[in-house]
Image (cartoon, rainbow, N blue to C red; front, side, top):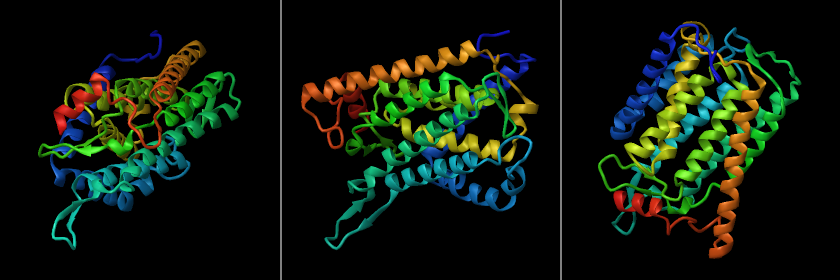
Length: 320
């Protein structure tokens, strides 16, 4: 028996690796080719909404995909993808005869932090909701196993801190290369890691037996490209991989339960430790960011916080 997970057959971990690399591959397609992005995040979802999801994600189905949370998460992730595509590519010729871009508008740059905060808030609400179920010994809710405990409160607080520490969105710009990625240099590695720990804890707490995929694999699918393929574009990677995974789960709901299950150990200690790490990392991030804001006399709603760091400067140098 593992510490976090137990798979009945090692082949399931091979399938897990395939899922990870498939998410990364489709993310790259949607990133470097505009037409691929429009097909993946506009045309395919429309077709699935009309002809597939009413059956595979119907309310009360045996795999739990028909909950309000799944439907809201699906369309909020897709809204993020399409919004980011608009920021990257929408342009027009103004009355002055010059070409103008959507990303030049400060109000448009408020969209990325807003959709990110909404997505985090949805998960925070779910963590608190699972605590309210009072399943202290574990049990089934909406056809998913879960267990209530202090970890839900701890991780809910971590998520709130993660929202508070979103910063520097007026520094978002579009990369100079042909892919025209949405680059957010103030979203440095420290925030990304704190987010990953929080989000993994959320999936472990609330979607326990699916978290090997929707937590571990899905987070790696956007974090690996952030560090090794296209630095500075974490939110773009995150939105696209999240949308891809949710569309797949809504279409093949039996995947994580029947086809390739990797359940958790259902060990309360594991839940506590995972959420403790998430809370500690986000407390540390918030404390450090507050220290910088106070020391440098910055306005967190307008200023970029990390402009003097090597991580920030490297991203700008690579993409401007």
